[in-house]
Every structure is written in C-alpha cells, then in structure tokens.
Amino acid sequence: MAAPANRRPGFSRRAQYGLFLGYVIAVAGMLVAVLLLVIAIIDPRGFAAIKGAALDATTPIAGAGRGAVRGIGGIGEWISDYIRAGSQNAALRAELEAQRRELIAARTAAAENERLRRLLDLARESENEVAIARLVSSSYDSPRRLATLSAGTASGVRVGQPVRAPEGLIGRVLETGRWASRILLVSDGASSVPVRALRNGVPALAAGRGDGMLELRTLEVGINPFRRGDVLVTSGVGGIFPPGIPVAVVTGFSGDTAIARPLADPARVDYAVVLSVYQPAAAGPLEAATGEVAAGPVNAPAPAQGSNATPR
Amino acid sequence: MNNRIASSEAEIALRDARRRFTPVVSILAITALGALLPIVTQMPLLPDFGLLALLAWRLLRPEIWTPWLPVPLGLASDLVTGHPLGQAMLAWTAIVLACDMIDARLGFRDYWMDWLIAAGAIAFEIVVAWYIALLMGADVRFSIMIPQLALSVLTYPLVTRLVLALDRWRLAR
Image (cartoon, rainbow over all chains, first blue to last red):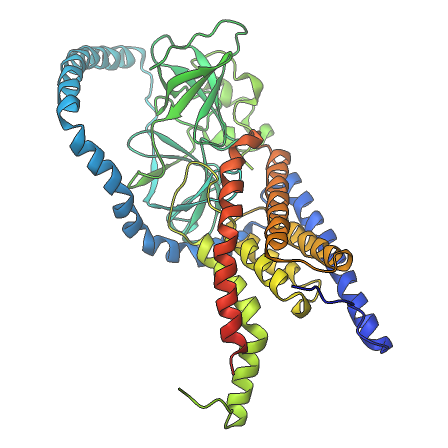
C-alpha cells in the first residue's frame, strides 16, 4: 500500500498551519505525559481520586466474567488429576502419615506456647479482618504484578493494608476506589516482604521477580541458609504484615539466591482477606512512629534494608 | 438488503457518524475489552490490545489521523488498565509520530513492512513500560517480558483482520 505521497494539504495557509498545530499538540501531549510520569514516580499516591474512580468503573465488569473463567481454567488441572490419581493417592497417603505425626507435635507446642504466653502476660495481637472480597483481575500486559480486589474504602480498605488468602500472603493494598482496590502482589518487583524460614528461623526479604516467583535476600553473604522445600512465613518485622502468615516455599536456586514460589496463587484463590496493618504506627509518618515501634514484638534482627518500602 | 441510498437527513447523519467515529470507538472498545479480561496472571503475557488496534488502524488508514489523537486514547488506556498515568500517552503518541516519519521517508509499504513496523512499535512500548516500572521501583529482568513481546507480535495480524472488517463495514454503502 502506498503511503500518502505528500501530507502537505495544498496551498491553503490555514490548512498547513492546522496540520502543523496538530504536531505541536501531539508533542505537547507527550511532554504532559512525561510530566504525569514524573509525578507518578515521585509521588505514587498522586491522582489517587482519578485512578480510584476508574477502578470503580471497571471492576464490576471484570468481576462478572471471573466465575466463568475460573471454571474453564480448572478443566486442565482436573484432567491431569484424574490421570495421575493412582500415584498421587500413594504419595498423599504417605504424606498424610507424616503430617499427622507433625500435627500432634504442633498441637503440643501450641498449647505450651499458649501457657508460656499467659505466664509472660504477653497480649497476643489478633489479626483484624477488615474485609473479605474476591480478586477479579490482574495486570496482564505490564511488568508490574497488580491485581484488582472487589472491595474498597466503603468496606474499610485503606492503602497499605496486607491482603492474604487461606493459603498464604497475597500482597498489599496499593490504590483504593470506593468499591474496588488495587493490590500489589508479593511477586511484583517493587514488593518486598520480611520473612523467616520456619525450619531454622533465618530472616530474609522476599522480593518479587515479576514472573510469579520470589527472590530471597538474606543479610548473610556467601552461604545460602535455605533448602529446597523450606516454608517461609512473615516475620512481623516492619510492622505491616502480621507475623506467621505463610508466604512461599523454596523451590530452587539461581546462583547464590534462593527462589521461592508463593503459596497463595492469586489466579486460584477464591477469596482474599484484607487485614488491618499489624502495627498502625509503622505505616504512618516516621515522627508518629518513633517511640511506639520499639515496644512492638520485633522478634528478628533489625529490619535492615528498609524492609517495607512504600509500595508504588 | 437495505437501501443503499440514504433516505433521510437522520440516516445521512448516522452514516457520517459511523464513518467518522468507528476507528476511535473501536480502539477504545478493544482497550477496555482487554483491560477488563477477568483473568489473573502471574506473568506479563497478553498483548496490549489497544495498541495493536491503534497500530492496525494507523497503518491501514494513515490519512484519517490527526497527530495528537493518541494522547487522549493513551490516557484512556492508562486509566482503564491501571498503568501509571502517562505511560501509554507517551508511548502511543511517540509511535504514531514515528509512523508519520516512516511514511514520509518510505514511499511504499506492504503487509510485511506493516508487520515489521508494528513489531518495532510493540517492542518500543514494552521497553518503555519496563523502564517506567524500573524507575518506579519494580526491579525485574527484561527477559520476563519476552513471552508477551512474542505473543503481541503474533497477535498483530489477527487484530489487523478485525480492523479490516470494521473498515469495510465503516465504508460500506
């Protein structure tokens, strides 16, 4: 196909200026876009009202189709389960035996724990559920891993609150609309969650890699304290995430860093629970927090590396 | 078959509106349709359908576009998909301006040329999105974007087919 040979619209000065003006407006638009991006980078919470309104408008439509898509997505798994039923049955039975023994040990430990806690008169800070909602969609064409949740400020959801599923941690609230909010998933590149390994209590930061996996950054250099299969739970350091929420399981290594897979797959979870910030002082400005945080249940080494950088 | 000759002023207005607004409305609709897909993915995988539609329209009908039209279209895309405001505004406008420059230098382009230009534009948008994410603190390797890049380039001909059908309907008499 031949391109239009000449964009010059004839001898009319007015038409020529009109065409030129179009280009001027386009370039000005690009400059405005750059300005908007700079604002977005410097202050991620700018334009919250506009983005929240857009979120409110689009979420119900995505939410309506979610049920159908979940049904279709499950078919492949259902078939493979059927084929592998025999070997899976044997493996599960062996696993159940092992789990049962561990469960008894865990129950004993929990009772012991409760008794010691009462002895120490240590108040257990409960996880306050703010809202229960569905994950309706996620970013699909950008390097960010953001999901949309069907609950917003009307249900008490606020920016910064942690979100979990029964299986484990999902992420944090990033933007809120009135009836919907956007979640920064733990696998996003800007997310980092302070965790510790259940087996040996080694603290680490679980940072997202953007492809659904997490990278474990430890304070130690050289030796890798993790093993394949290690379960990581939130440590409570930083005061945002309540301690003890399962986060990920170590699946492999890439060079010196351990790679972990999140336990809660946002594509599969039915419902997500929004929790209140573990220690509200930690989410506020620094001046308000000084003096209060020091008294909190910090049970791991200092939260180095700014463990809970503000999500963007 | 209905009458090919418009019988009333209202019908003329309707046909005129169809001829004028089909491109813009279809781009907005495809953007919204893509953004509202009720799926949750763990990786960037699916193409930015709005950009593909814009490219297909721009390469098919260069003469109907004013250079600034991608600015509002990009803003709408940013709002609907939840990208940082300005990302698609910047990338889409730059892409359309680059298309104008290519058209001014290139006397002639065929289907394969169009596909090549579209592939370049898609790669440009993905690099921009990745770099902006990097600036915003999402430190991810570029290699995770490659499946999306490949899939977008392969989806372009399908979107072109759709746009061609719309164009035929738009100009039908």
